[in-house]
Image (cartoon, rainbow, N blue to C red; front, side, top):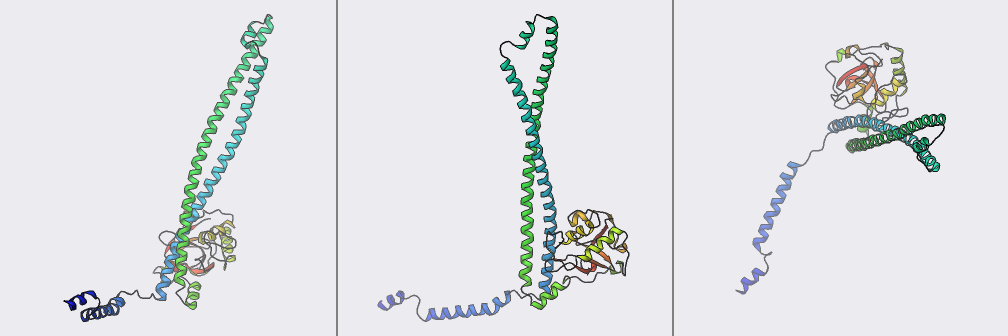
Length: 349
């Protein structure tokens, strides 16, 4: 019985426990040797990393274009609100002037004191004076009524302007929140791309930043791309191309429109602005600016768009080449339009 009690006092000892521990350790080793290595995530190749970075940059650029469009709407809402506030201030000043005029009339009547104007008129003994006073009282009464009605109209208009300003303010706040969301998305995508690029060697990263997308195979429709030198269809198009050449080497900065840095639509907008042509701010609005042209009829100065969501744009310069602002880390450069999935082209002027 004593031996039995001693064995129950030490449940974690004994041959059976040691045997069980041995099996457990063996099982853990087996799991590590087979299950662990079987589920380990294989390290991505340089090509896979580059493809993922390309996708992140494309998503960041799509978010950038949304940011650009929303920023324009924020500025528009802000200008509208400022205009309403200015108009409200002018109306308030006019209202105060009208109120002061009514106050002066009321004060004058009070100081005149005594009899009601109608009674004063009735007690006039001179017929000529009576008629003169009657005509004057009628005119004064009409002016007073008109002044009061004018103040009432001004109050109503001021209330309308204030309500409209409140609506514009609400719209502005909504746009600002939307702007912040797009900005956060861009930064998130760019940060993820940078983390992936950090996994490449310095040589691989330099090669990536110096070239085009890693997953950009030659397109089957290359034969439809004009080759050789082409003449710009207009002096404005020639000026836009000249501006783009002058921007070569300048950095890509999302949301930038020059002159020191550009994003893709910022570059095309600035190039055509130098030629006296105003383009919308974003890729998905620029694609509707001007006349659509087929790929086989591209000419220098045309805007060329890429991807199904029309999230990238470049300026065609002839010979199947364009000048564009590719992505962060890659400055404005000349590149073949076959580098990315072609979505369409327009000719602004």
